[in-house]
Amino acid sequence: MDIKYEYLELLPVIKDMLVQSSSPYLSRQELSSYLKVSESFIKQKLYNGEFELDKHYFKIGESKMLFDRLEIDKWIRAKGKADGKPLCQKQQTLSKYIS
Image (cartoon, rainbow, N blue to C red; front, side, top):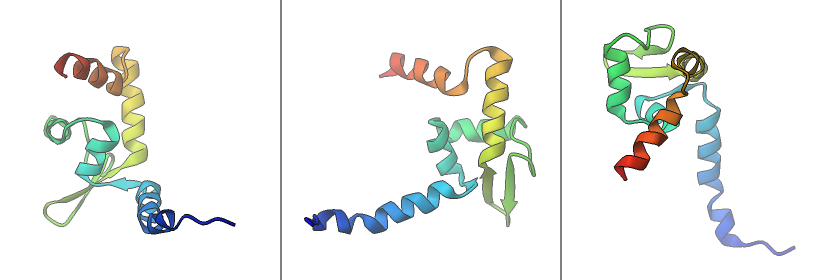
């Protein structure tokens, strides 16, 4: 059996990625990456009340927030039904004009 040792070095990185992706909760930065939107977009949704405390996100201490991935997924599906276009599709449309 031929083992490529450079692949073995990647195992800890792969493990971290798998552990991260299996968590039902996301930080603000992880959420923006997950949704492919800016962090200011997330802040705007918090400010205008679209993301509800104890439903879409939870506060840990004074400043730490964790977002519930399942509730965010439900929000995306509901948002897509409300205006006819999924959130990510809008972002992709905008990005092709900007870049």
